[in-house]
Length: 166
Image 1: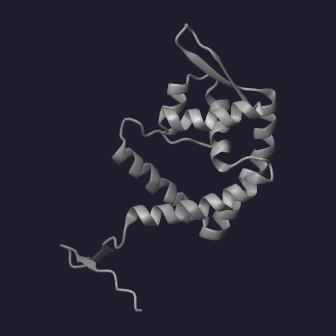
Image 2: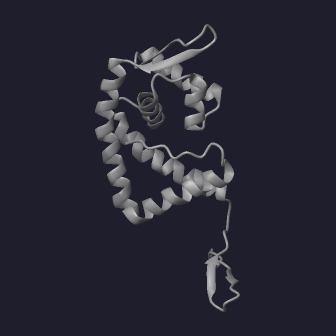
Image 3: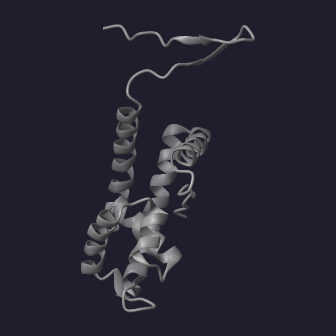
C-alpha cells in the first residue's frame, strides 16, 4: 500500500512550508517513547534499575530532602504514581521516607545504598544516552529536546521546568 504524500501548506510568500501533521501524534509519541525506553531500560538493567527508577532516584538525589508533593510536581507525576514508584525504592533500601518539618509532612532522602546504585547506573545511563545520540544524530536529539521543552511549556506553562538527568 502506497503511503499518502504529506500535504504542503501554501505560504503567503510563495514558498512551501512544512508538511501538515499526519496520523495520531499521541500514537507516534508513544511509539518513540517505547523505543527509547527499551534502549535505556536495557542498559540500566545491567545496574539493576529501570529507566523510571533511575529518573526518580536522580531527582531525589538532586532535590533531597524533598517533600513528596514537590518531587511529584518536579517530575510531572501524580501523587499515586509517585507513591507506587517510591514504594519499590523504599523496599529496596535506596530511599527513605521519614517525618518532615511538622507532623503532617514527610521528607524523602536517598540512602547510601541508593546513592551507590545511582553512581553505578549513571555510567549505564550515559552509554544509553550516547547510543541514542549515535542512532538518531546528536543534532536531532538536541532538536527533539527543544521541541519537547517547547511542547511542555505550551501545554503546562506553570509546570514546565526542564529536568536534567546528568
